[in-house]
Image (cartoon, rainbow, N blue to C red; front, side, top):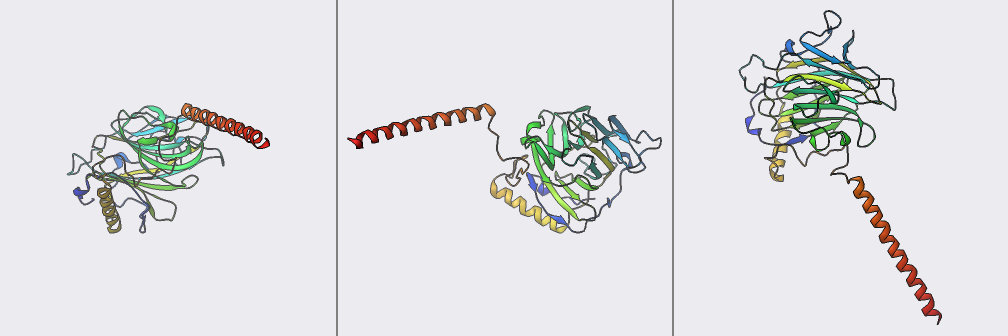
Length: 334
């Protein structure tokens, strides 16, 4: 179980590229079978014990397939039991999710849309946010393979802390609702991810490719994820499609950060203090949203007005220059 580090409880979003050299590609602690699944997935070839499947999600011999490589599909699988482990830290029990997945399909240049891992205040219905409901309360981690903002493929992992009111901004791939993220080429290979929530409000994520060490995706502080929420996974396809396959989902006690990670986090806390953002919750200048351009895009009608305005100004300048040219010719010819 992770050591208590309560003095870090007040801060913001901390992305990074720290590589953890000694990657252990399996949970080191006790795995809570009530909240986990792995091969073999089903006793009867259909249902996953302790989990509920919705939409186009099915079990196969090799995985739990959230969606097939077909257009306009949605699917989800939700843990039937709320997270409430038999531990001493009953009010705010931490957890670690070890996720193995493979996003794949026939498309080489056209594919999408992605999948999500959830920890929310209830089992959600199918919806428009990677196959699940918008305006959720809790945590959403999004594995996106298509950028609506860039109108092209961009494999990106992001996290959103939902308050039950804020909507996911589809046009800008989450927009300002995203609090952290990282670019990872995860499509077409077996990938692993660790999402770790500690009771002192630290949320961190790591990814690993086959036979590679863990690499940090993000660290977020001041996140409160109480007990009683449900784990889930969902995916969706639209005009573009992919197989969104989950090989295993294991929930265990959180592993403590190593010395290098602690030192790195300490440096970032000091950076937050110097930048004056120590008390903010969801915004940090250290987080560079490299999935889209920084700042708010200019609305189309404003852009058109600006273009027309520039054209008028250029027209006036051209007319002025032409008048001056005629004057010069007349003046100097006399």
